[in-house]
Image (tube, rainbow, N blue to C red; front, side, top):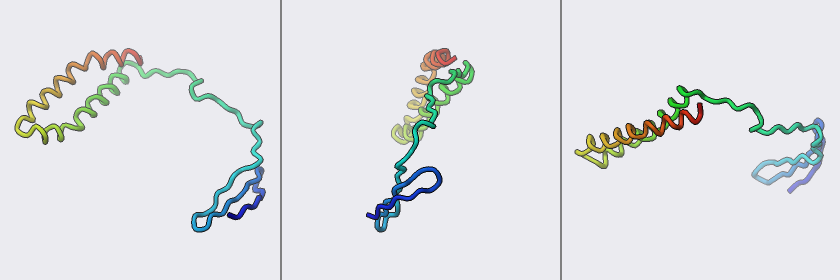
Length: 106
């Protein structure tokens, strides 16, 4: 391990050489008084609106359900239409839940 300190620009750096692996550098004199910290959740809240929230929820539920339809059909064999009818019934029953989620984010 070769340890050498050098200054490039405004910050002094320590350089570590690892044989066959490359070099790692560490900044040793970072001045933290010039850093402005803002929280990520401190900005204004933006809401989606009912139409966009419903579309996102519906797309999420539909895509995650129908993503496995081929696997469902493979396992069900000749009973695949019945299994997919059950999937459609579950989607129909989840409509009220989807609308409730959409109203929450409205």
